[in-house]
Image 1 (tube, rainbow, N blue to C red):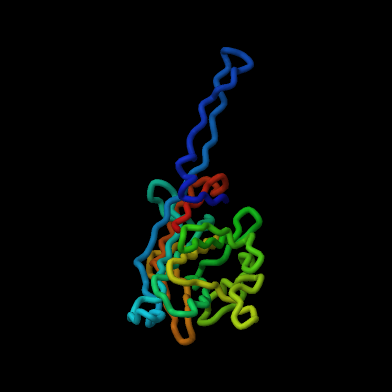
Image 2: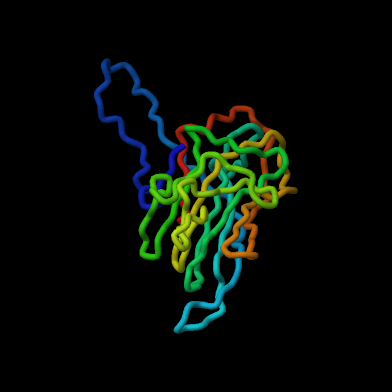
Amino acid sequence: MKVLQPLLLALLVTLANVLPTAAAEEPAAPERTALTLPWYDGVINTVGYDWSCPPVSLYEIRVQGYAGYTLRPPNLTPAVGELFYAHLVLSHPGNPCMGSAVGGGIMLPPGVSLAISAGNPVFCFARGPSGQFYDLSTDSGYGCPQTLTQGLEGSLALIPPRGGLVINGQKSYAWGMAQGTWLEFMVPLQSTTVQAGNDNLMFRVNPDIGVVGYPGIPLLVNGDVIFRTAIEDNVLRLSI
């Protein structure tokens, strides 16, 4: 599974066959192109409020986020046993003086489990207030977890394996956010049962002590696995 930055999506084109064939009568081999998987996203969820840092004092939204999962083009839901990705997209419009130390975790409906492997890892990305892009898996202070341990309220915790935000000289094992920053997490999943939208695929977001939100979306997984192809050679579109 590959991930493309938004600015690189325009480069995903079918290449013309420019090499001569060994024999004129032989047809050109079929070309392989990567398939970009669209996201099916839920509504934006507000997670906490704050008073903005002086000299301006405003009561404002602290964190917002939404959850979603991949479809097969044009709009086919995942099938039973088929790998698909869920993602959480977080923004930080608020401006508390110290920013936020954000805890996160994914909450799976019954019958749904993680499908993390070397070929289909968890992805963790960030974007700074000036547009800087970060692949957190290569960041010396954060990293991206490939093993999700048990978290609060039945969630599977998304914890930066290299310590995350440093507070008073100590690793907080949380994701640091401040005004204008973004985070995006992508987690590979599978379902062993049909999902009719009765249960939500959710993320647990905790930007401050006692402040918790649950961006989510009803999960739809169909039972039609005939003629479904493997998800390899496909790409995920970044939302941040």
